Length: 95
Image (tube, rainbow, N blue to C red; front, side, top):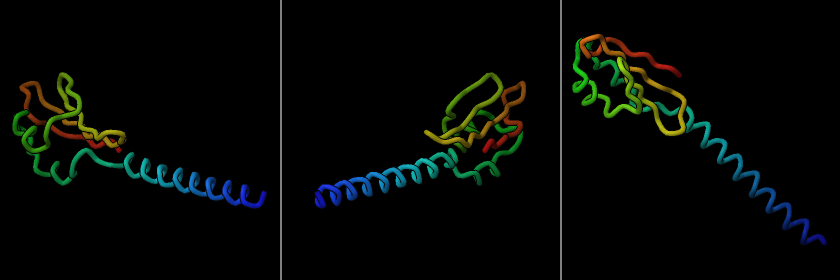
């Protein structure tokens, strides 16, 4: 009987530690940015979409006048806005 309780306590401890480790990983992952945000400082109004793509990489989503960059299982999103001629206008960081 004592052995059974000891085994159950070990299994419960492993389960709790695993659950905590998964939770810590998910919180860490949830806060990851899609790229180094310092790269946004290199964007200059008037840049073409190709120049922005070279700087930031391929966007996660493309809309009519904007792009969105996000990482898998993460909340922070960077929006890139373009003017009517398709040139970079501004960005917004949603965190």
